[in-house]
Image (cartoon, rainbow, N blue to C red; front, side, top):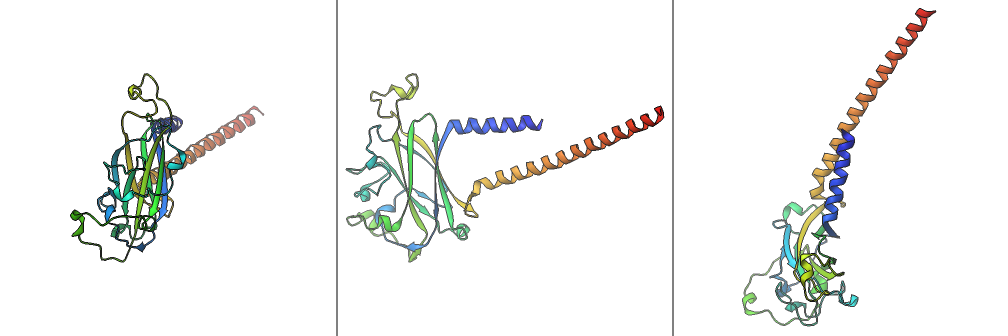
Length: 253
């Protein structure tokens, strides 16, 4: 019975991995100077209050130059918005990462996990940036709607930024609904993404995996207990069988 359960677990895990792709970026949450970067104030934010985000991101075409992917921030990043792609920039998603919440104060390492359905043939590029990577970029003065907003009084903060880029990797199955696009190099629909931020326990284990680890340890403990009981029972039966056989041999003699 235990063998069947293990087999089903393996099959379920394989089936799950086949349905979804994942990209992970681990990073250290070191405190750094709190640069006043006005154009990041309206970016989507991951934090302790909102550690999960669902987003539809348009993938870049199949023929996107490799030099345009996974490099430095676009020079005109100040003009980026969730609905706006600056000139000479590619399709991408920028996120602010706020790590200053008190429940996370004791954690020094975090992970951002990006997941999407395997039916979308894309390569994902997930990169973490410091404030010092964004602050030197050229930018004009803030628009009027942001000029009177209160600024943080903390000189040092634990803040990072994440950039996600998707690139189409190939032609879809002709029978697939997504393959109805007129241009085979471009996906006809945005790719639904699930983005998760969480601390790393002991610097290696995602917080969400802790219950799974305890469940595995518990199952292993139960399995060891049952195995020892079965082995002890078998050894006892073997000893009784040997004793019985020895007694019968003496009667024959």
